[in-house]
Length: 257
Length: 283
Image: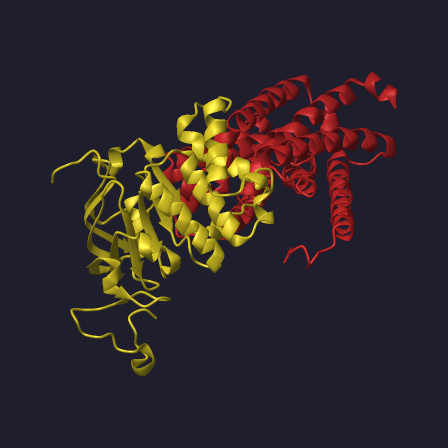
């Protein structure tokens, strides 16, 4: 397969088995430079699993992943990937300030046993300002609302000067106002050339930003194309070749339970 | 009180207390951050088997304890990483295996249980100059690594998955934390004893975070509280004629109680001074 050093993500035939049970089957997925791709699907469709396999958090049973033209196993420019995990993992057992958490995004730029330098401090302050929390820099993470914690995790990814943001359900449990500001933030980043791979259950205010949607169902790609092919505001439904979706309430067996 | 410095054994006890009081919370902060507060207890029990192995073979128990505790810590981390055993079950297995092994091996060595007592609850006043050198060297290594690598260890304990995607060698650092915890436990074995050592790793951190907002402040305050409790515990145990180990731990718990009370009072005062103002749009 041809390699393009500019292409943030190129996944081919990715399969993952958890406890011997296949969860992903032969998934192909690309994210081009400056592209905003949404990975949609019901709970258990394998969308988070794909993101975890593509970032090397869990092993693949088959398939290849290239990040910026380099196979995942040999990819060392880790600061180019900004991973934003689900927010429920944000608060640990000891207090930490917004500044400290965002500073941990600078690790790839820092040396062992070294102090943080001016460039680190500038990147951290810039990232915190970017997500609209400059007055909360010294606040403890646990004092913030869920939406604000989500923004801190995004700031941590921005602080590493990542070119590809990989976000796992950033809209889950976040109120509409915070979703609006998230949309505004991501819109600005993509405009400046960042690429985004976003896992979501619902799109909400992010919908107009998305260049391409990929819908997973039972671990396989069920739809790939513009957002218009994915209808419904609160859940991601698929128009399958002109056949109107069956109302879930009638069959009790919707795809997006 | 100054006259206690006239005794060699008290001088050695105080020096050992300084190293233990600083090292235990230095690494304990990361255990608490990672929600593995009881890991120290598990390793402590394993170290007991190491002590008994030393008694049985005639090798210095501090050395066998370090080796066995480090091995035990590495096994726990590997079980957590690759095994199907959940963290708490792995810990439980260590608790029982370590304690039973320690008592059994001591019996085989024809030593009485009172010898084990020295290690279970500490016997700070019987520390030799040789012990003190080992304790000092190991404690300095633990403190240097726990403070020097704190950006990396913080990132790992705050969010392991993010750290791994960012290229932090997560496995290496996880094992390093477990090994440092094991070494700290052996350092503290003579001071507070294996059964209470985990308290000195966890209680100062719990006390510090009542009053702090940042990780760095928690880390520093925990080490200060650990130092205070260890030194204060040794001095008061001399004054009131009690065992140093439990005295140190109870002093640390007192600091925790005072800090918790202070935190609650300040929170209450602050909310009274700044009541929620509906007109200003606080809600």
